[in-house]
Image 1 (cartoon, rainbow, N blue to C red):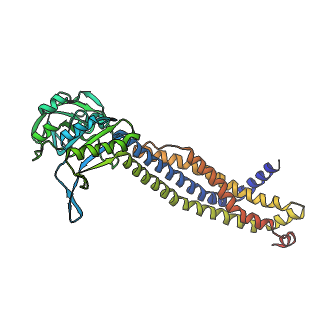
Image 2: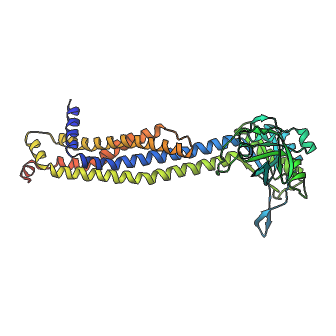
Image 3: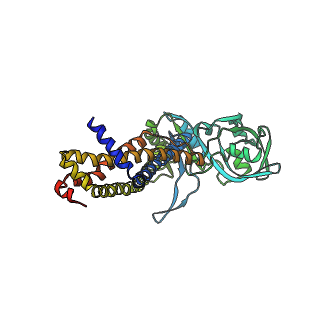
Length: 406
C-alpha cells in the first residue's frame, strides 16, 4: 500500500511538469535506443559472419602456394607448388571427406546482346561438396568432362540474372574469351561473401578446360588454391598435420627446410572474424552508452531542481511527521519512474528502428533478450544512481529551515 502511494505521488509530481519531464525522459530514450540498435547491429554482423562461413564450410582447410623469400622478406607468391595430383592424394587421408583444387580467371561472358564480367573457376566436381554449393537446375560437369577438357560450364545466379533474366540457361551457349561454352547446370544462390563480394557472380568449369581455353600456364597441372573438407571441426588440427606431412613427403622437402605451401584452417579464420565482430559490437555499444550518461545527468539535474522547488513541501511533510526514508523514497521513486518510462520507450524505439534499417539493408536483424535486459538494467541503475543524491539531499533538509524557504 505504501509503495503504491509513493508511486502515485511520484506520477503526480512528474505530471505536474510535463514538458520538463518529457525532455528529461528523452535523454534516456535516445540513449537506450542507441544501445539497443548498436547491440542489434553487432549481432547482425556476427550472424552474417556465421552464415557466410557456414555457406563456405567451416570445416575447411585451404592450401595455398608458398611465397618467394628475398633477404628474409616475403616478396611475392612463388610459382605454383600444389599439383592436381597432390590435391587428389589428400582424399586418402583419414577424416577427409574430399578435396578439390581451383584455378581462376576473370573474363567477359556474352550471350546474345548481353555481356557481364564474371569470375571463372576451373575446378573438379568435388568443388561443389567442398564449397557447399548446390545444383539448382541441370547437372554439374563430371570427372570424365574434367579428364577430356570439355567446354561445359555451371552458372551462378548473378550471371544468370544478368545474361538470361527469366530464361532457363541450361543447354544454351555462352561465350567466354570469345569461345563457346555449353551451360550444363546452374547453382543455387549463396548471396554476399564475408567481404561483401558477390559469391553468385561465378562460372564453374573443368580445370583442364580453363587451362586449355582461357588461361594457359607453363605448369598446367598446378592449382592456384587447394581445399580439403574435413568430417568435423574437431579433426581440423590433426588433418592439417597429416596434410603437411604428406605434402612435404611428396615435394621431398628436407627437415629444417620451410614448406613451399601454406595451410590455413577455416576455423581459425572464423574465430578471428568473430572476435573482430565482437570487438566492433562492444565499441559501438560503448559509444552509444555515452548518451545514457548524458541522460542520467539530465535526470539528476531535474531532481535537484525539483528538490529546490519543493523545499517548503518537504518541510511541511517533515513537520507533519513524515519519516526521512519516506522523503528519500519519494524522490528516488520519481527518478526511477522517469528512467523506467524512458528505457521502455527507448527499447521500443530501438527495436523498431533496427528492424526498419534491416528492411532497408536487406538484413535479418535479430531481436534478442539482451536488449530487454539492457533496457531493464539501465532503467534501474540510471534511475537509482541519478536520483540518489537529490533524494539524500531532500531527506537531510532541516524542516524548520525548509518551512522558512521562500
